[in-house]
Length: 91
Image 1 (tube, rainbow, N blue to C red):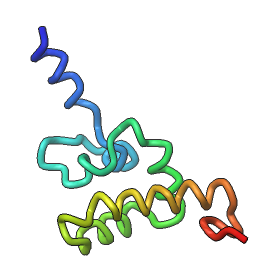
Image 2 (image 1 turned 90 degrees about the horizontal axis):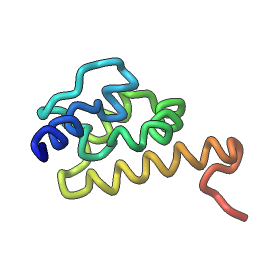
Image 3 (image 1 turned 120 degrees about the vertical axis):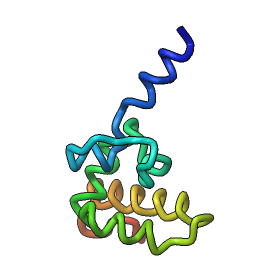
Image 4 (image 1 turned 45 degrees about the vertical axis):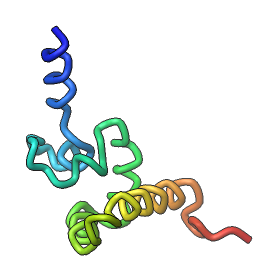
């Protein structure tokens, strides 16, 4: 039963694949950084950067910096949604 639960969890498309309506498999390079649980945050980032540019940013980042890049992308997307003018800048 435990293996069945693990398999079900792996069948959820990551936020990037869900946005593109693609099947997400174990070779998806975006899945570790944009899990399905962060889909709404990914949508915010997608409105600013677009999926293609997000993928390019992630590909250009060094492997040890990709998690930080993903967090930065999601943070910027959320900030722009909350304050379209100033975004992450605070006065």
